[in-house]
Figure 1 (cartoon, one colour):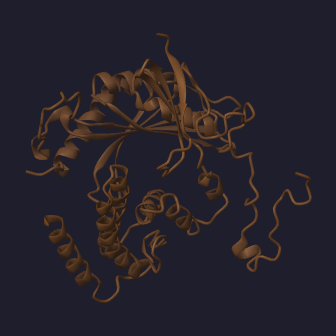
Figure 2 (cartoon, one colour):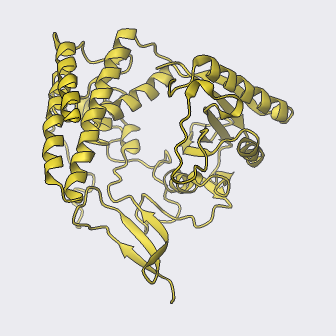
Figure 3 (cartoon, chains in turn yellow, cyan):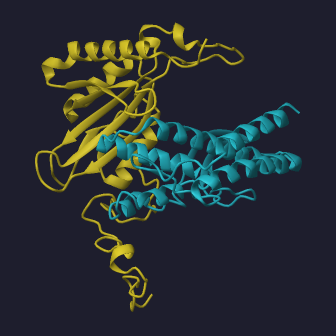
Length: 216
Length: 181
């Protein structure tokens, strides 16, 4: 008895989930791929690429039909270089077989004996957004508790607007940061940009703070 | 009785990392909480935008100073995913061992810090004693006691030193015996 699943189980679960998603959403133009990690046991996971309009439908399907019960991470990326894609939001989801365990009960899950939708699976959802100043994605705060904090953080740092997210506020930046300031957007530069101590100033003689001479 | 919000923190006598917990209390019952972090948010992602990919590993070491090896690995594996770089099998095994030794050291740290919290100072001394054992092993790999800068994109900085595997085995065995005690 082991605590991990086998490659066959993983492959079966990935294929089943991908087929399920393709059957439901292929008409809508959503891309579903099976990707393998390139380290460790090379487990496979499902990658979904959809548009913000489709995201709520995909999310509900993942939660209700495929048993996805853990929103692990939400990140956003800013692509200011031009092209169709100005922003990208990535959701990382997991399906764990252990749900709502009663207190004082000891259930031992044997990895090899898990079947069907009980097999743990990883989902990665990419939502591509057009270029512009106001990237917006529907929130899934009400579906997964884990999305609550992660969406706050993504809005705080990257500036993705999560429509329908309740109680949105700054979590990592100071609470009195200027409205519209989201530091991971590429137009914001810090003093390290275009300057590399190791190459440009190896001895450190020229190193001065950018606010030198300013009265504080 | 009316409910009210009370701010707990950010200072606390046993502070390990500063944060605020806003708690909503009804009499003496806590009915809701809201965490406020960000006091030690250093913007590493933003710094990394202007750095070479090899220069980012030391930054990742410093994300968590009790498990530097693990965080550097997390970054390195993400970079390898993007580059689709293949890692030699030997390097994967070395990485696995390094990360696991780091895990032992890291867990001993939280257990050791937890000891005084519950009023058991002996636990801390034992944990820190055993942690030194594993830090010595990691020091042999990375050259320093805390921040190793050991993994590289596509492998590791250098091969394990001669006799390292035997020393690892002996120390793990000693550690097992001490746990059984």
